[in-house]
Length: 297
Length: 260
Image 1 (cartoon, each protein chain N blue to C red):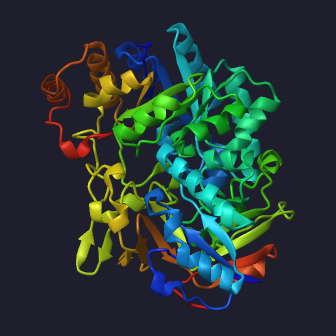
Image 2 (image 1 turned 90 degrees about the vertical axis):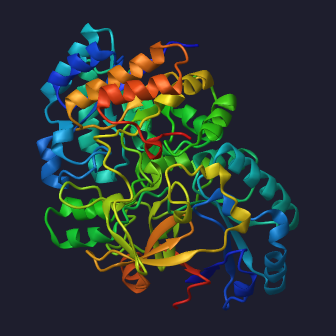
């Protein structure tokens, strides 16, 4: 099997080194500059994460992240992974120019305009297609191959059967990544149009009434018993997926480090039993895993 | 203004639709709820009898789904000369373009509208850039549109969002406005299978009845509609949108929820 890589989230320069030491081979992060917040607030309009605390805020931070990742021989990836309106593009282009000039490696995007712009300027930034793009079939990969993409992040809504089918016939000139820890949602990322702000409930957190039935928190808070795909890692690697992403930007850094360690242990252990994985989960996160928090069944 | 009706092949009794020139059929959120070719016999009969144009609506598609759609289209083109295909999947757009099947239309799931019903309040809250963003369609940008020209896109589908919608600078295209239901989100699986362990590919959609359930969100006071595997809110006031948008030349109404 091909070499794997764990891709971990960070929200500040100080978090880069600990997650790389824990076993991540790549970090990803978002940026929310002050001038952006003045115009568009701190909802998820610059990356698919609300709150300035989930982002770095300055261009100097870009330099710091790229430098530490380089020192470790690892990649660093900037998440600009939503789609933007025409008037927002100058802000995005400025950020991309700064990221490239300061030694950044890659960008995660879902916006065709960003891909076209990077192509047009001959950027050396690698382009990863976000889960927000909604790549559910091999022909969509073919469509985006026109933009020189290097990696596709698969939708987390796919079942194991659908992943196997997708990977069996898809283009192997690009790498494939899949989310393996935290934050599974009832809604499909690429088709969710709910407003994700700091102060208000997200669509998946709202209370809905249906007749006498009350539906509360459709998606679960997973800080205690994280959503997880550890039991499926071996099968996912067998399909040809090489990059395993930890979700949860702005989750406590110590939890992210634990998650990186847990996924690395599971990947490094040749075909561990479910019992071993579950035992390890409990010893690391302090609670038994729950079947309802499984990814990719 | 062209008025069209969207019909559901699972409700043949609702197929008696008001006067119109075009009907939309298919499904916009679930590939399992797309018809097989032998299930649209009644629809084809009606279309022939009343000289109705056809628009086939498709959702996001897995590899299995895309194969099913392509088989369906191969059969459809043997009996209907010109028809539109609403695409919610870039892979399908690529395929129908290379195979020269149908007239491609970009679905309202790809045009990039912000649709949360809470966003209307930003119309009156500065800065103005926020309101402009929320009324925009993120796909409708110069370079992206120039790129999409190679796929012969002439029409984009829009939702009748409360904060209205702008397509400034994209006047060479035509736009359809869907009323009254505005999509908020698509579930991984139908709410009746509301359970993270339910495997979507195991859905037996052939027994799945059209499922429109009224939900509400007590905090907002808005009525929400769960239709099959997606959530919508309703905004029947299309006149406000039409007033501010001169390039909409088509209204797409739901035959099962008439309001015009």
